[in-house]
Length: 295
Image (tube, rainbow, N blue to C red; front, side, top):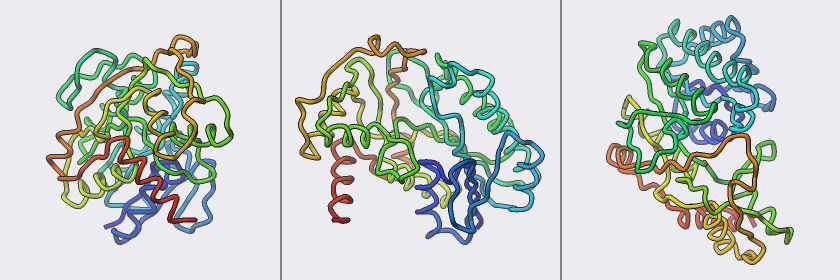
């Protein structure tokens, strides 16, 4: 079985590559800017329709995993045209290529599609995105659903683990770097997420592929937690100074768009795969263990 990862140099994409290369017959990846010195990586701009279709046709994969998108929530809010081009049109171009090769499509989406109403969201709830980022991801999801291809849509939230040198910091690595420099870390008390430990996300994806599953899945961690409490947990696990963490409100950040506080259920994925999705303490403890193993 051959897998093609679109966006293989990105945070989730590269972690997928590192694991899946050991479990599937053949794997190829694409990158846009972060060049990887590996013959399995190829440069591709998915906003170029003709090149994207031709590349997928030449690769002829059994499965295409699309992780690439415009990742900045604020950037999407400020530049709708760019968000549409990268996330929506880029996904449509990939789907057109998949139709030629009849490849299964795995689309990595976000819990931002759900919006900001109270309650715990399941996969059966109707999405109602409140940010332009969420809107474009949902538009891309609908393209996948209506493509006529076998598909998986994986909605995740705040993925975290150790990063490569070319990746942007996630909430955990940013907190660790800031506190290790003995600098003040400002974190929001009224902004909550369901943080997802990336190795768990990888294990779930692998299980779904191996067992030929299809459909929509919330692939998130096991704990709904505010950003301030998450930072405190990080400091506690890594033995960093908690008094340097200061609480602020989301309003003080003056962001272009209010962040969703969606609480989502991962029970469908746990039932389907039997995989334990870690809570924040468990994920951070595993990161610390990995860090100590490199010393």
